[in-house]
Amino acid sequence: MAAKMTQKSGRSRVYRLARFGEIIAILGMVVIAGAIAYQLYLMAANDPQIDAPLRAALEPQGIVGVVTPLVRRSAYFLWVLMPLVGLIGLNHTRRLFRGYQRDEIFTPEAANRLSSVGWAVMALSPVATLADTLVVYLYSAAAGDAKGTISIDDTDIFAIVFGLLLVVVGRVFHEAARIAQENKEFV
Image (cartoon, rainbow, N blue to C red; front, side, top):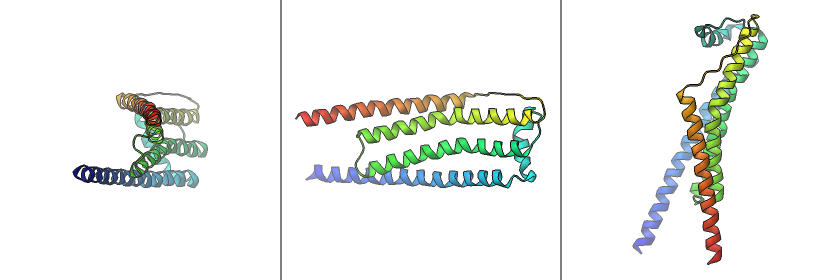
C-alpha cells in the first residue's frame, strides 16, 4: 500500500514539474514570438527612422557602411533567424514536457525530443554568427567596402558543446529505451 502511495505521489510530482517546465517553455515561446513579430514589423516598415538600432550594432565595431532599403530589410530578416531557432527549440522542449505529463519519460519519443532540443541549442550560435556576418557584409558592401567578420566567443562554444551533449544524452536514452522494450517483450 505504501509503495502505491509513493508511486502515485512520485507521478504527481513528475506531472507538476513537467507542467511547470511546459509553462516556462510556452512563456519563452510567447516572448520570442513577440520579438520575431516586432523584427518582421521593422523589416516590413522599411522606415529609415529604424536605422538607429542597425547602426548602433555595427558602428561601435568600426564598421562603416550605408543603410539602404535592401540592407535594412536583409538585416532585420537575418536577425530573426536566431530567435526562430530558439522558438523551434522551445517548442521541442514544450513537447518533451508534455510527453512527460503523459508518462512518456523513458521512451524513444522522449529521447528524440531531447535530441531535438540539443540540436536547437547547438544551432543557436552558428546561426547567430552567420546572420551577423552577413549583416556586416551587406552593410559594408553598400558603402563600397565589403567586409566580413566572424566572431566566436566562449559562450558560443559552450552552446555548441552543451547542445551536442544533449543530443548524445538523447541518443543514449533512445538506445536504453529500445533495449528496455526488447527486454520487456522477451519476458
